[in-house]
Length: 220
Image 1 (cartoon, helix red, strand yellow):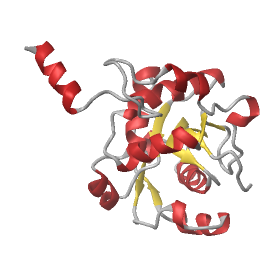
Image 2 (cartoon, one colour):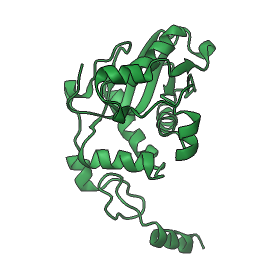
Image 3 (cartoon, rainbow, N blue to C red):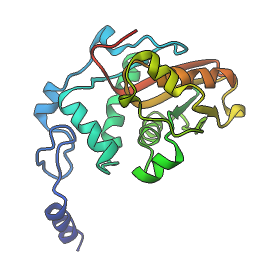
């Protein structure tokens, strides 16, 4: 019965590579070609200088099949991608020697979460917690449904767009702790910087950050 059910699932929802979306054997999430050719960040390319954050790293550049994959993840109801992205996130923070007391994420507004069905950054944080053993805690809440950063424009406008959007959700779990902040993409870093400011105001000792991808060229 289980084998029959699996075959039926393969017919209805054939397994596909998370990145190139080509058909794959069941149990294989990333094809060999993508493993070898993804736009990996290397060395200093992994790092992004962001105000309020000690270190921010990303394993991949936000381009090509990575961009397409993340768009499917966010807007195509493919929440299962979080498990695969978690592998890349875990390896990246391990390579950079990150140490933290808790993991949190950049939250969606209630309205956007209802429309999407899930909070994509939270799923990433939960998966990273599962892989590292570091507790995942909701330390931030979004209090205003501001326009998407991707449609905002210049770095200055992006900073203004997120100003005052987030609040501390658990200051008693934040004070004196080293926090790892998780999100899917970083471009100018305005959102991560605003979240870091809220966490530090709540007493965080240090804020680190990791995202699945970053833009290759960016404004400081």
